[in-house]
Amino acid sequence: MKQPKLIEVKVIIEVDECADLSYLGEFSNKAEKAHIDRSERERIDNTDYRYFNSGSGDLTFIDEEYKRMQQFIDGSVQSLYINAKAVVIYSIGSGCSRLETLQSGGLGGVDSDSTDEYKESIINGELADLKQHLQIFNVDVSNFEELAEGAKAAV
Image 1 (cartoon, rainbow, N blue to C red):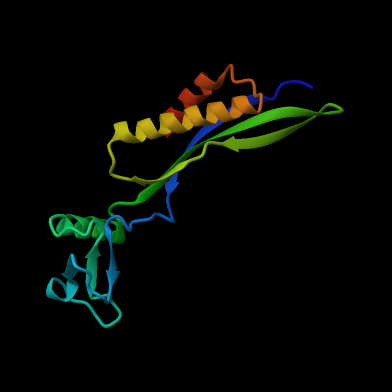
Image 2 (tube, rainbow, N blue to C red):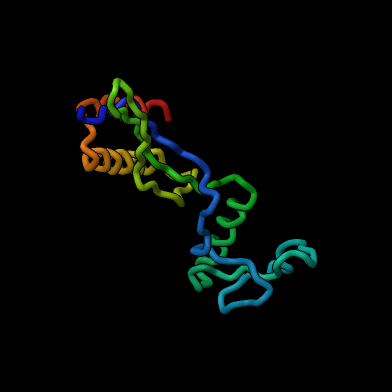
């Protein structure tokens, strides 16, 4: 049987719909030790949580945590999920072939306003993970670098 051949590499960046923002804090009707009483800062109605409890538990950082959480809520910042995917082709006999998609492990929780250098380092890590994954499945990766460069340019 012929070795599987790599025909496409893509970098996927999408909104992380399941982002865990608990490190920033949480809204609650019960005040913890380090909290903001939202009714003293803004108009809230009876369906809103009254308190914002610090994720770090430290009053020193609570204003920063609260502002950052508000950025996620208003959509000015999003949490991203980054991964890399590859399409490979292999023979299944009788002149027929099959396409399969393999992907890197992926990383979520990347802030959309992170530096380009940081996002590039995540992309490079996902591409390295994908290449290793392909090698485990004995895929011919002789053209991986070329396809990966094209995938990075397309982002």
